[in-house]
Length: 226
Image (cartoon, rainbow, N blue to C red):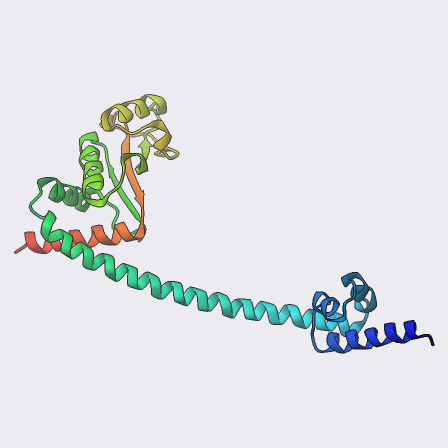
């Protein structure tokens, strides 16, 4: 056996020892100073090496699951801190805003027409554009929401023309066509033609803003019921 053959045999034995210990092909190639393709050619068809691959994948999946769990727990704690902080801020802000007619009007509009169930969405639905104008002003002045951040969609009767209704709402509340979500139609036909331009839905997506709004409403209702 030549010195070159002995060297290759020694490399093979070292690589095999590393593979049996669970090292990847790439790691073995780096340690033994050989090409990854050579390591693959040596061990890819061996039963023991295939078992190592399966074991490595199983361990990696388990480690990833644990890692994701740790990350999610950290994020959950971080969110809890943020939520507590925004509620505390809402209580301070309420003391300063409570004398504003627009502030109280915005809260009462939402009490009457707003979605209180969804944890992330602020959504107010009504057929009267003037209420939407008031609520959009409220969002801007007290929650820092720019007008172009507001999203809107219409709930329409089947016999209403979508384009005509959109033009009506765009003119009345000052949003652009690009701010509209896909409009929806009521199934069936109403016997009364009371909603000539459908029901408008003003929407903002933000968990923090929703928590702030909910806390403001709680404080306002508590104060108004004294």
